Image 1 (cartoon, rainbow, N blue to C red):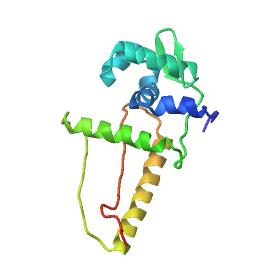
Image 2 (image 1 turned 90 degrees about the vertical axis):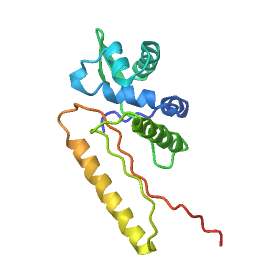
Image 3 (image 1 turned 90 degrees about the horizontal axis):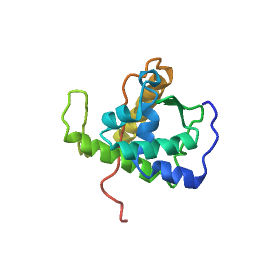
Length: 165
């Protein structure tokens, strides 16, 4: 990754406090930097004031650059370690957006939920399939030459019963 300079913990707390910063940060990579504050606000269904305030923060941190009234991805990148204390907020932000997307039915959205009872071995097989899928998705994303749309990809598998032995 280019310029993987770390933001401070306080800066990361602000960035991950809401889905808005990450969404604005990501959307400027689409459509060759042709986004304005108004187009971003409209695309993400945000107020212009919130969009501008969030953009000011992203600009200040070097995550986004501005040329005239257009915005594009900055050189600085952000990465959250899987063991970070902020990971819970990060996952929660996007799960809440998934719930929000249920209300806006679209053929472009895909949701699947199920509850199963399985053997430990079968659960392990599913976990391995998830890891393979995540790696394949990450490879597709890394090789992508055209950033036309912005999507959220979430994948969960968790035990519903706690062992109380």
